[in-house]
Image (tube, rainbow, N blue to C red):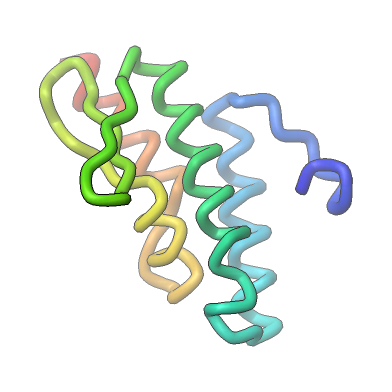
Length: 105
């Protein structure tokens, strides 16, 4: 995605602004969900890795789903948040902000 879109993603919390905007642009174009499902999963995984690096969270997998567990014990689902963002009801940037705030106490 970085190569094709020429977008700089550096695993910083700030880079999630760009990811949210890219998802919004894709959504505005109106492709069927099935056509963008893998891209959204990739964006969610990227956001999850940003949260891991910011908070020390760990990836958890159950039943084919992937979650993050922050050091405070809370579970987060960045892949689902990417889907919600595509539907106009989520934000990977805000998910990161909330997970980081929760993890820091």
